[in-house]
Image (cartoon, rainbow, N blue to C red; front, top):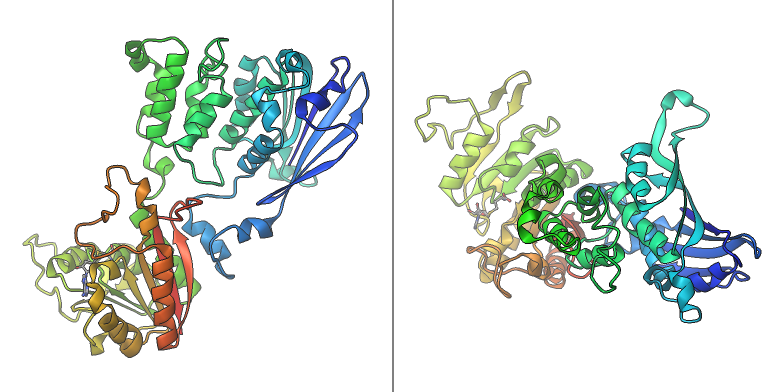
Length: 500
Ligand code: SAH
């Protein structure tokens, strides 16, 4: 990732003051995800170019993540909903390396920082889903002349068409800080994904960079006045509705509108409208089931027992996996089992008389339209804290959001029954990560996510318990985060994968 900034102001080498980086020196700045280099390919009084180059080190990126062992790295990307977004890494580097320039600070020459200068910004590879038109719609209203060329997927194979990268050149005259703030906001918006957790502090970052915090008296700032501000805000804030609404309301304020008019503002309405499901992404429960399925596939499980299967969220997906020879669901609650039965045996007893006659009968198959016979899960009333011969003979066992429903004094009994007696080759355990709870609005400190939870563990507690279980029963264990991972609190769900 490369950005070059060229000016023909006189003397052009003033760019060095503005960037706080001397034109004669090449400098490197270590980031957690790689190294940012700043150097000047040319520095004369007539023309001066500064380059910011970011070398992303995939190893560091990987190391900065939670314990993810091969061959599950691909899986971790699946488990977490954040792809590695190149633009947002670059923007982080931009903010760190050119922080003072971005804020328009220049102690040596304060007037210089406020002076519009002729600038050319070049970015040879910018991820931009909307193509050249989108880039023009974003930069032209800000006073840039835009040259945007799609980068072909493979120059040798024209038939493959274009990638979603643009070669972008922006030319205009404005203070350097303003130019940088445009990149700071618009690059991640164009990319539409961030490699890190987006929290409330991003609203302030956005408004500050957009000049809309009212700190200076020079108008509403460029973002509030931008015709695409709704789109930009939504994308910058990773489509988090609540943040988008707050940010747009504050932008409207900055733009000197009254509260009433704000509601009629199509940009506000547009962005506040509930995004469709696809955009919002799968729910945490769905992600969890997906993560468990992915682990079972990675472990090549041939049969699965879902202990504490509840209403069958996982069973429903397991029955569609044609590689599984046997599927069993167990729960203490017959009501839950009935729900599960309805879910996995849809259509098998369309008599609509509530309780299915063969709820716990030994049935062998369920006919799915168009897909022939699928293995029908055996559904058993049972408890994981009692040794049960029916649990044996499965390749893998799943305890998805179940351990936290057990009284802590019964955990040893569960360990004995599952790990000591049934002894499946693979055991997958998921449980809430208590550290993450502070991100749940309206959940008082120290409270649990669910009334029936007997405890919720921090990552350290879950790790300690899991390692003890593994050690005592001859298993190895590794951990995977499920759901969006916050740098401090981790992901909402923690998953332990035990293998014998
Ligand atoms: N695994 C499901 C349900 C989780 S809710 C899912 O993730 O969607 C917890 C489930 O554990 C409930 O259905 C509850 O009835 C069940 N459960 C609680 N104690 C249990 C026990 N001792 N043995 C088996 N199931 C139990």
